Figure (cartoon, one colour):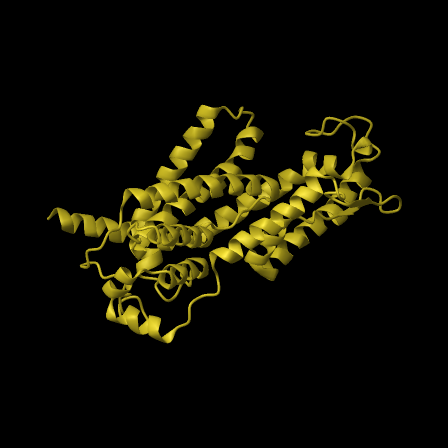
Length: 338
C-alpha cells in the first residue's frame, strides 16, 4: 500500500480524550528508573560495545510500582502516565548509550574525560536527538506505520496496554477495545524481571566477589598458531544481551570475535614478530605482545573503522527518508504560519 492511501493509525487513547498524562509522579518515577538503567547500560556498553533498550523493563516496573501505590489509596496511573514514565526511563538509557560510544572516541582523539566535557556531550547529544526526531517522526513513524515493525516498541506498547488502568480502558478508542478483547496479554511481568535480577546478582557475587571460578577462561596457542587464543566470558549481562538481540546478531558478533582472535591477531603476530622496534601505534615490539595487547594496539582501530563505515552507509541509505521528513515538516510549518 502506498504512503498516500495507507490509513492513518488509530491511537489507543484518542487525541481528543482528556485524561492525566504529564504528571509529576510519572516524571519522577521515570527519572529514577532512567538513572538506574542508565548506569547499568553505560557499564554494559563500555564492557561489550552495545546495550539493549530499557523501555520494556521500565514500563513493567513503573506499572508494578503504581499498582502497589494504588492499593494504598493513591490514584492509579493512566496508560499515558505510564508511557511518560517509560519514555523518561528509556531516554536515560539512550543518553547513557550515546555517552558510552563517544567516550572512547574522545579518548582516541586525545582529550581527557572531564566531567564538564562529558556533560556537554550528553546534553548536546540529547538535544540533537530531540531536534532530529521532530522532522523524522512523520517520515519514520507516521508514514511508515505498518511497514517498519519496531518490534521492541510494539512489545512495550503491548505491556502498557496489558497494564492499563480501568480509567484508561474506559477511555480507550473502540478499535483499541476490540483489539484488547481479541488478544492475550504478553507473558512479561515484574516477577520475571526481579527473578532474573536475583539470579544474575547471585551468579555475579559468587563469580566476582567470592572468586568461585575464573571470570574469563582463556587458552593461548603456541606455535604453529602463535598469537591465536580462545576465551569466553560467561556472565549474566552478556547472556541477557544475547537473548534479547537474538541468534543472528549474536552470531555476527561471535564471528567478529573469531575473526579477531583466530585470524587478525595471529596474522599480525606472524608478520610483525621479526620487528625489533615498536610499530606505531603500539608501544612495544609485536613479538613481546600478547593477544589482548595486539588487540588493543591494532585491531581496535580496524573495528572502529568498520563501525564508522557502517554508520556512514546507514546514513546514506537513510538520506531520502530524512530529506522527505524535513521537507514535509517545513511544509507543515509554513502552512501553520499562514
